[in-house]
Length: 112
Length: 111
Image 1 (cartoon, rainbow over the protein chains, first blue to last red):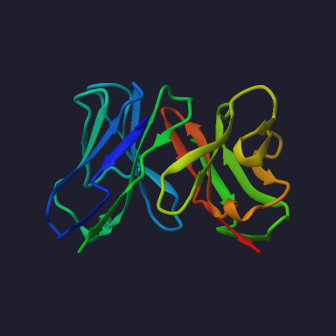
Image 2 (image 1 turned 90 degrees about the horizontal axis):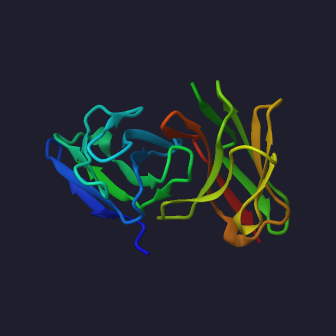
């Protein structure tokens, strides 16, 4: 079982460049999430989706956009990357709001 | 609003010793609580969760946690630490449509 797959796994961007992180899940989950993980801060929610075609802001949405055009995919976009966006990004999905979240392996992004 | 506080960013124990990782939560509604583990360069995986019912919850790898409403706590324990338990552990609470994570506690296990 693939579960939650994130691409790419590593990326280095220059300040001002744009990129899209792709998350794909094969568990038919309704809910999908994007988190960023920074040392000493745990995971902070960037955006989330409660179903195909829906998105909502989390704790730290500024500088990011998302889209959920297909149920199995959740895309995270950075329009103009900044060094403060250097982080490890995790995608997760869950069946319902109170069920466990399944995480991808993470994307390590460095903005120079 | 829901929040989670994990006491101690680092905990070090000897192999075979008791593991105790502390978590306190704040919630305006009956909480759903989780413990996740993250091994190096991997995503998070669920150790255990509390929703309703029995307050002592058993999880994978010999871990368990007890929900104490009066103390707003959900501490994680394991009777005997193994070297393979070295990882980062996150306590989390369900808040609305999303899970809110604590800052994490890194567990070191000494031989």
